Amino acid sequence: METRCARGLEHVAIAVKDLDAAVHYYVHVLGFAPPELEVVAEQKVRTAIFGHGMGRIELICPTDSSSGVAKFLEKRGEGLHHICVEVDDIVATLAELKAKGAALIDEVPKIGAGGAKVAFIHPKGAHGVLTELRQGGR
Ligand code: CO
Image (cartoon, rainbow, N blue to C red; front, top):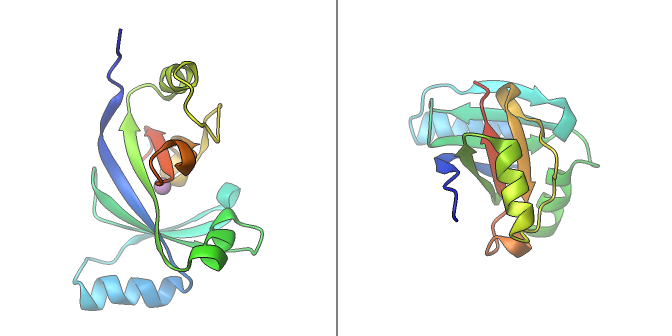
């Protein structure tokens, strides 16, 4: 019996080296309204979020060289870092994914941007794209 957990694309996250320069591009070249800025201490990143509700764009920039995003930038350069899928019940979704053998990075949700509960699926088990699951938050 399949349970349908995913509600849709919550955001895409793009790793950037210089947050101010990237924000300038999104606002002054692409024409987005100024973003909501946040420091996510647990993930050692600063974020700039464009848009509201589903389908937002999130720029992420490391605050520390030990951040996973810093390592990503070193290895791959700027670009798509992850997609985020909104789910109704992240704990139940993680249990279901684990039972199906998904390559979970987080078996227990942590707190992400906007105070949401988040957990990541490794790109090796997600057709090459780091995938965030998210429940709640702003
Ligand atoms: Co994200």
